[in-house]
Image (cartoon, rainbow, N blue to C red):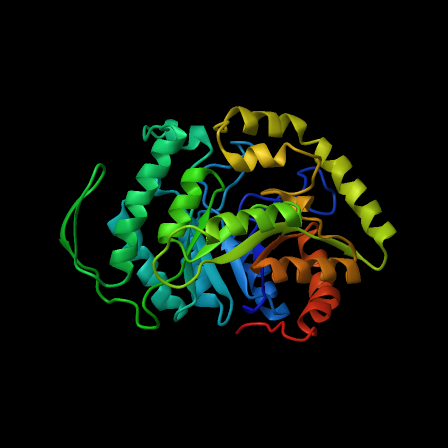
Length: 353
């Protein structure tokens, strides 16, 4: 069984549960992200995901952290935690992105990873004049894009002529000094996304959802034809853990009520989202707190119950849990103090690093 790892979503565009929480004022600044990622590392978290948006996806007049410059800075400031930076292929040419990735890999001394996502926020691309192609066309573009990036990350000399890119005799130096190349994480659950991750990914990020649904997703992608080592799996989840299940449910209802106040913001987000994006379809199935499935993964309950659910997901194949909390500091500290020891103390479940 693979090692169990815990990560945190950097608050790149503010709170994940609600923008109306008096205990979590809006703050998407570099200083706050720096502070929280450094604290996550000190608490024993293994990874952080820096999501990429050029404008705030919830409300355009709110601040938004820039992912790749922030990832480079975090790489220099940290010493152990993995830095995963998301990338939307239409925003960066593959040669430029691969060069940036190799530089951050060098700064971090082998702790960097790329998270490939195909855009869902229409205005971000349309208003820039880039355009917002149809869902499957975006995945065709992303597949060609990552096929070029992956070879460049390996230090190969690349000549490629395809539908979107014409690259001639290109090689990047210095190449990765720590491993063959940085890992590639892939998000998305549509059929084209599953094909893409099976062909080019190292880790598939699954949005938070019940265990049986996650088992089915893992089985489907694991059965697809693939070259190289077996695919690994990560899961997004929002955590609410307390001494008792009743206390956790009360905290959940409190955040659910606060999240309801974000309804106008969510309506705008839905209007700006491609309806074919499976993540959004999944999130509309039931009430939940958090993004990317959030509490749908069921990590709400007593410390023992949450630890038990994490172990069940791990037994099903989940290696990395990318977690959300609110209020961030207090709940992240609570998880590190109460849930991590209950999971990592279990026989056979070891932390990395």
